[in-house]
Amino acid sequence: MEFISAAIIPLMLVLIIGMGAIKKVGVFDCFIGGARDGLETAVRILPSLIALLTAITMFQASGALDFIVSALAPPLALIGFPKEAAPLALMRPVSGSGALAIVKDLLTRYGADSWIGRTASVMMGSTETTFYTLAVYFGCVHIKDTRYTVKAALLADLSGMLASVYVVKLFFY
Amino acid sequence: MINYIWGGLMLLSLVTAFFTGRLEAVSNAAARGASEAVTLSLSLLGVVCFWTGMMNVARESGLVAVFARAVRPLTKLLFPRLPRDSEALDAIVMNIAANVLGMSNAATPFGLKAMRALNKRGGGSATASHEMCMFAVLNSASLQLVPTTVIALRQGARHPFEIIIPVWIVSAVSVAVGAAAAKLFAAASER
Image (cartoon, rainbow over all chains, first blue to last red; front, side, top):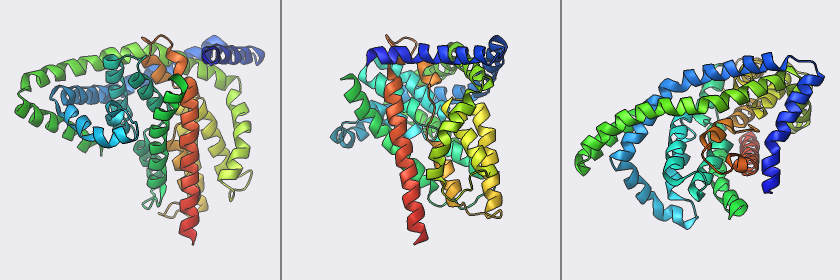
């Protein structure tokens, strides 16, 4: 399994560059164009990242985060959910930058190779900013009544959060 | 909503700090958090740009079209009422393919195009159609093959990429649950 994980990325890179070469695409120029898009995105999200990382760092330093986490601990312990990841699960559907700030904090405090670090990474990588997406998509066509969309989307998020915990346990431990 | 969350986080921090006697720690945290955000985005920049660059190569060499072909049969299952060659279905297929490759800059225009086409089919109603709901649910789940931001964050790990297979499994579970829920709710609302 470890070998497969290690081989996926090199394989993808070979596939992409190989296919570009076969199709006679200017691979370097294409790469530069795409990387520039990435740069723009990074610059665009910086203000919200500053706002949210500041707020979350303050929230943690004040002791408020500890209160919430310890209040959530008993019910979460019943289902084997790491209480440290609970704030991430709550933030993820609402704000991508906020979730990013929490993951960064968890990776710094517990380490990327820890159980919590791995679980947080999988949660972050396998879910999306649900409310933002729904607002953009329904907003553009002026839909007022989204019916059952929020319910279904949040069920998907919830299952993703729970599955992250159990899949990481099965996969690594 | 984010306005309330952000404002709430700030206010709660300050009120809590007042009672726990950590006002100074919170002021320091504000400065630290703000500058950490800049270091963080700088440290992510390289890896994220690398992948957006690679994915642009993938798009230019037609890999998106290959993915789109693979996705099409699946969309028949999820959107049975859309005609095969409709504008809406074409945009949906391209949106999903771009999402799989993690090209959100390319996926969003296709997604909005699909929503507009679906809206036209529904006669511009203010109530979402089942197809719109299903499509929005799919987009609010993660379909991305390489979770670039997380991998960039994990640069200090022994194996930054080791989470990729778990991410695929969990994404599949989450998308399947979302799609199934949308189908069930749709069926229930028709009764």
